[in-house]
Image (tube, rainbow, N blue to C red; front, side):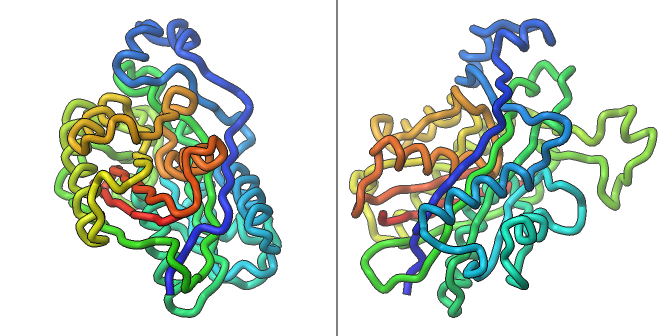
Length: 323
């Protein structure tokens, strides 16, 4: 028994923040941002919109494509580092909004690798008798971005993506995966304020400790190495050669990381990139990219698709899917 993706959907807010807009906010240029990150624009939520609001729309689209009614959902797994609140989980808020009575619903925090972690959890549920598992990546990163931080504030955008997993005994679905984590380098990418270590206070707000902090150059080095490892190990577990992969969909963090990984995998012509339109949407980036790739006709039935990600934790991993 395998888990396969029966439906996909994504949603991004209407408001767009361009590189030209950043020229008015910080000391930068459109050319500098494009060269450093590959980003041209990113979508930004308004003050009243939260991660669950984006997730609900993405889930509705995934359910419609899969032709599954909300009352038939078996479980909801939501990956996010920008939840609506500490508790209840964003997944529970999505559950009640969709009208999925009493099903298991919970969040996972694995940074930008969250959606892949969610797929692995969803696959495990499928193999244990569950059906119709909603796996979500939903983020409002712009709400935890420090717009005085010239080195990183232009990177982040908001959005959500969702996948509906179903069981199958056919030759399709998730073939293999590799997941890893290493907490020893957590200080290279983190959000300090708001937890039990540093609960919210005037001091944490004044120091902007509720915002993302990232050591970009160091993260670049680790991310390139880890995402390459994730790709190699995942393919090894599936006994699949790199050239058999039709499309590689990496986490959309930075075009330089994507290019470096593509070069190491000798897959420059098989990499899907949409970072120019959305920026880094963390756990939402892979489901958004996967949905767009399918809609653009880049993925056909029977194709092997490799998903790879790296995120705060550090976490990283890969999932190989036969479409």
